[in-house]
Length: 339
Image (tube, rainbow, N blue to C red):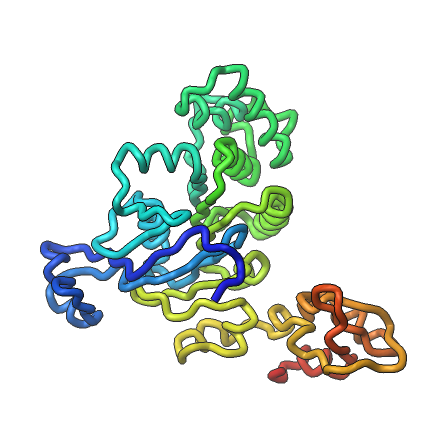
């Protein structure tokens, strides 16, 4: 269970494509994947239930065809679910009128997709201001707001450029700025960095985290890259064949997979990337420590400091020391032993 207030929840959401999807769900039925396929239907999303906390970066992962993009489009009702509930701040979006959904998307949701979809005949500033123009905001106000978010994503000085004059990473920044211009409190990102070169992709991840530290949005982020998920996620949902098979922190997914599929999915992840100091801290205090480190710090981030120290490090959570960690414990994780 999550500890923060729930911003977005879906309960028993289905999206079945085919001639008679409602028949499969008649009477509250829960058809198997085999039954769905046998009747020439496609179970794009099957009985999905999630809770996403306020201010959380919630990552959805899965192989191609697992249903992750369809689920996110169901959450915003860009795709109409076959059945279920989607609650946004307690309001069931599946009961909302078309006009109400347009209002919510325009004013409270931001969306960034893999393909930037910038308008080629508009400048950076005009592209960013475009959703505000759709809202009916006057030109002076929308351009002022657009300049704020252009600066936020590090593109000041590029306001008059057209998309063709920008690199891929810069174009993606414009897409991010455009989605932030409406000041959404719920932000959907569907593999936004996957088309970028590795170096630019890492820079964009860092930029994304910097923006999130400032704005503290509730974010639903799709990726197929586990390293990216580890860097960004508070929690991760793994999907397979349209179903959510596990929701957990990156550390929990790697150390306690729910089934063989999740275990295989995470098998090649270096433990040092996900294991935190809190996981390996030994309770109690020692006479001398080399310093204090947060329990949430991952081994990979602090291994060199700990291994080269001549004393253990104290481990702190919420201002209180919960134990200590030794160089030997860190080395054990680095060489692949299970904590």
